[in-house]
Amino acid sequence: MHRTIALLLLGLFLWAFQGFSSQQQPLPPPLNVPQPDDSGPNVPSRLQKEMEKKANEQRQAELKRDTEKLLKLSTELKEYVEKSNENVLSLDVIKKAEEIEKLAHSVKTKMKGSN
Image (tube, rainbow, N blue to C red; front, side, top):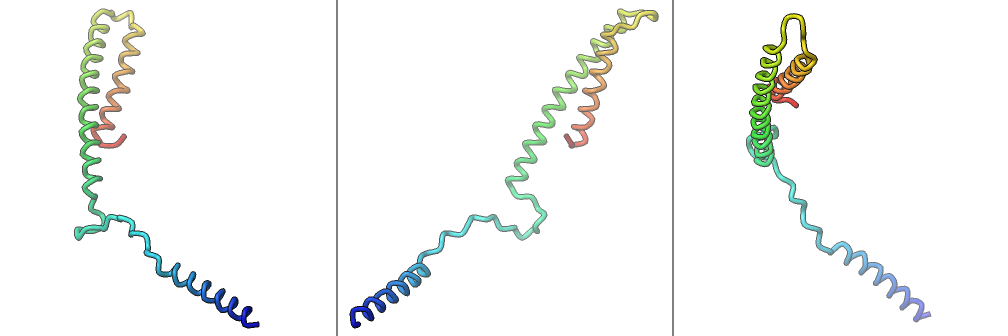
């Protein structure tokens, strides 16, 4: 009978100790969540500003490349038109004009800042 009580007390002690020890384990470190600065929640973070700057630089480079291509295509179109006469309109002239139109639309869209 004493042995049963002793085992029961030992079991209760271990169970209580296990619950106590699990409560005393250190908490994991808090996540490093960026806190909004004093300027307000809508102000972009430094990282976002850097990403926007890089996107703008890339957009500017694409605009330069595309406008150079527009100039080249326009010059080619002018040459095609000069070679043709009032009775013959080359299929190349129409294709070149369509290509210019498509590229000009792309440049206009990029200038507006949307993709």
